[in-house]
Length: 485
Image (cartoon, rainbow, N blue to C red; front, side):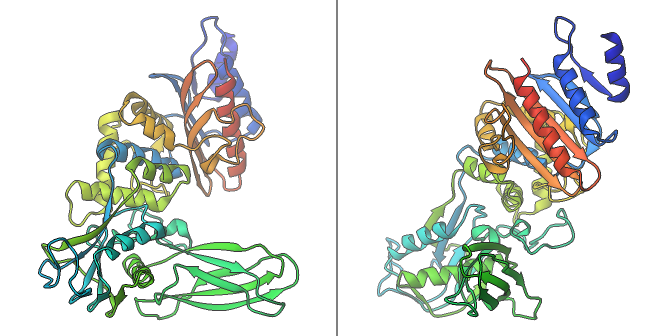
């Protein structure tokens, strides 16, 4: 047995905690999985603990690119620093000196002689349903016409839409959406595409939410069959800031199912404002002026308020589906809630770092954490450091239940819904995944029918093309933690 441990240590620099009988069943099983997967030395990092005690590690102090497992420190800081049940507020307001605004916040005569302000509160969960609720709240004020403009106040955050912490190249996809204190539908537009009436007709293409802010060129064609090859792209045309142009192209089979394509937009405030004008019109409130950006006057009177989901639900949206936009919005809100005006990503990231250094014992200068979503190759953390953050979360009863609930469940939901199929560990692993080219991560907790809970971090940084193999290995490793009795 001593020879086996020496050989294991020689080829896999790991720490193995033997059982009381001198055997190491967990170490032996994991060692075999490593060997069978045939990864190069230094490509895999592992850290496993039971309670506060590490029981297995390999390359656990080496810095790796964590990809979206970076959302673990972000979630920890957000839950730990913001009040339980915290909600963000989006409001409609008017100048406090509006002459026909009565004391009960209703309008005499129904017309606002001035501008209506839509003030963003940094709500990452503000979607069409939220806007509809806000408009309905406003409708009760008796307002029927805005003689001035719809002014969007985005000033809670700075105007840096894509921080330096993200990768340099912009991607025309929903996961690379811009940031803004007044945002809507994750700052992404949905293009719905279905076949036209007959062969040769253009396909039916609609954008949600449609407004003058969005312009669509439809060059699709309906043909026979069930294939749907339609694509949507943003055109690089010299359009005014108040408009975005999308081109739909490709073919759609007559029997093809409807297809949804998600595209990021570039001007969150104007996107939200134009959608608000459309929703207001549907409730009988006409805006005569234009949609523009601005700052609400001091002493503005709030007429209607829409509160966000509770904070724990927003964190769950981020973690379950690895939503980069939500992560980056929450980081800026950490800055805003600390009193920064305008809030910045850099100051929010500093609050995350300070939190994990204080609660998990990470030492400044031993890691790199620049982006709260992990959508960068500049973040560098070790498996041990991520494991210490996870351990610190388990230690804090005030926030651990919400954190645990936010994690995807193996084979059940979120980014793990299609993984672990056929394994005994379906439903027994709660973990955050990570993915970039040449990067795979899985970190969280495993349980078993005997009540044992293990904390684990698995990271792969290696050759592109081996991501699927690393993902399968990590699923098997997590499964081993569940069935190891």
